[in-house]
Image (cartoon, rainbow, N blue to C red):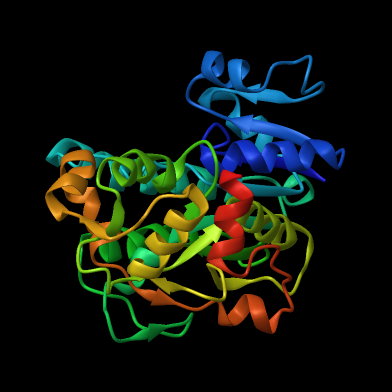
Length: 302
C-alpha cells in the first residue's frame, strides 16, 4: 500500500509509521514541520519515505491507497483557553483539509480508504454507564470536539471506505498519559487519582497501531470502531496494577490538585472517565495482544 499519514510525528503516528515501514509499504508523512519529521524519520532508517509539508499534501494524497488522519494537539496537556481552541481547531482543520484533498482527487488516483482518529471523549463521562459504538454522545467540551471532528470526516466521498477509530487512553513507553502519570505516582506513593472509582478505558500502543493497520487493509472495518481494550478498569485498579509493576505501594491517593497542576483542565480526561467497550472490534474478530491492563503495564515498564 501507499499510505499518507497526518500526525505521523505523534505518539501513535510514530509507531504506525514504523509498522508500515517494517511491512514494506510506501509511506508519505504529511506534516507541518518537515525538519521535525526528518529528525524522527531519518532517511537512513526510513529509506524511500516521503516527507511533505502542506503545499505538497495534494500530490501525496493523490495516488495513495489510503490515508490515516491522526493529527491534533495533544489533549493530555494544560488547557488554557488558547490551547482549548487549538485542540479543537487543529483536529477540525486538518481533517477538513484531508477530506477536501481526497474528494478533489480524480477518480483513478483517489485513495479508497480513510482511517480517521477520534476519541472516547465522544461519549461524555459516567461512573455507571457502559458505552459502545451505538451509545449517544455526551454534552461536555470533549464530546463536542469529537462530534465535530467526526462530522468533518464523514464528508468524505461515499466511495471511500471510512473507519472512525474512537481512541481511549493509549498506554506506551515514551509518551501519552502514562509518561505524565508515573512521576506523580512516584511522588505520592502511587494511590489512585481522585476517587479511584472513575473508569479508565485504555489500550496498549501496539494494539491501537494494529487496529489502525487492520482497518487499512480489511474491508469489514468501516464506520465507528472503539479503539479501547476489552477490559476497562476502575482507576483504583489501574493504580494498584501500576504499583505492583513498579514495586511501589499504592495506598496514598494522588490528590486531584496534583494532577490538575500537571494537566490543568486536561485532567478531566483522567478524573472523570468513562467505561467504553470495543464491541465492534470484537465482532470483527480483532485479536488483542494486551487485553488486560496488568499485562500491558508489565510489557511497557519491565
